[in-house]
Length: 151
Image (cartoon, rainbow, N blue to C red; front, side, top):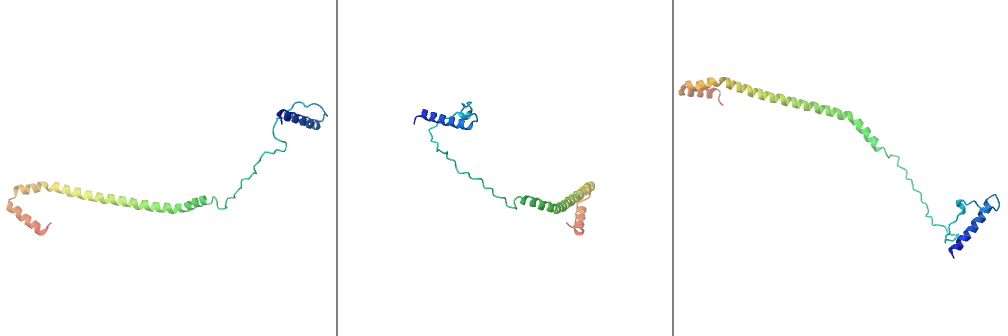
């Protein structure tokens, strides 16, 4: 099995095939690509191994696929008015709480300021009472104060 012999055998077969297929009857081929043969050591009965083709199986999607997202959005859209009402009620009560707390703090501050102003206004009279009035008279006034007003 010399490679040159295989090459020569293939050329003679190709020439016979070309003569039978061409309409000119026995004329020499024009040198096209189909006329050139490549020597091979394989026999003519050789068939290359072709694996069995397995087509991809298409698994159909279930009918409920893709329904969860729109249903979730629909549920959220239906709950939005209720959520808005709850947020408005919460905001109103929170605003009322802040306003009442501010008023209460203002009332306590105002009351303490009034008491401070009264003490400042009466402070000169108290100092005068302590400085000018005798001790026994201060003691008598203090006892009457405790008797009627107390702590």
